Amino acid sequence: MLEALKNMSEETFTTLSVSILCTGLIIYMGFIIYRLAADSKAGKYGSLVLFFTLGFGVFGFIVKTILTELLQK
Image (cartoon, rainbow, N blue to C red; front, top):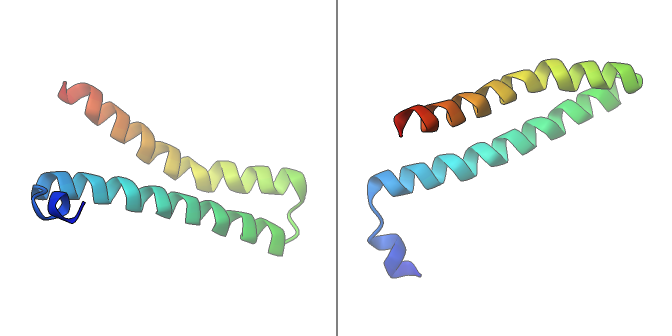
């Protein structure tokens, strides 16, 4: 396992790192939005609005990544 990591190319490492770390960041941002909704006592509608508006940027990032991959092929 360690030998495979040592022989990994820089491009593969970067792609893997960005995928894993961005996924973790997106999950953490979801947790932050949830805490923001809970602490502000936003209710169901307010929570929905928070998740939609703040999560829209995450959605845009995911769509950009998918479109970039599709257009490169």
